[in-house]
Image (cartoon, rainbow, N blue to C red; front, top):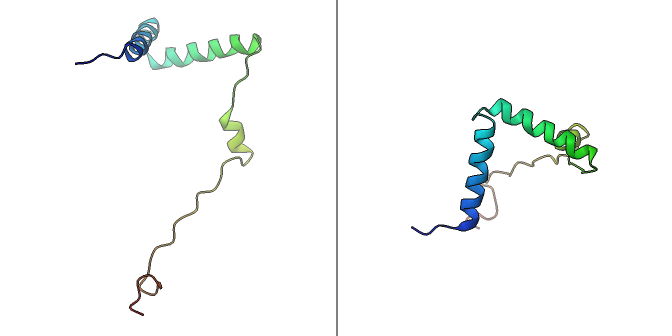
Length: 77
């Protein structure tokens, strides 16, 4: 089996982070929020998608029209 060094590096980082958090998703979320606060203080900028959604930034999904037998594409004529 062929091993991709980049994939292996990502998997190693994931295992290290999981071990750091004791494989606890709640600790992981807390750690991410803490690092985000630290980086904001350093001047990093983050996109907050939940704010865009509140302001109507999401586009409405249009439903596709269903075909009927009256459609010119499906008629015999």
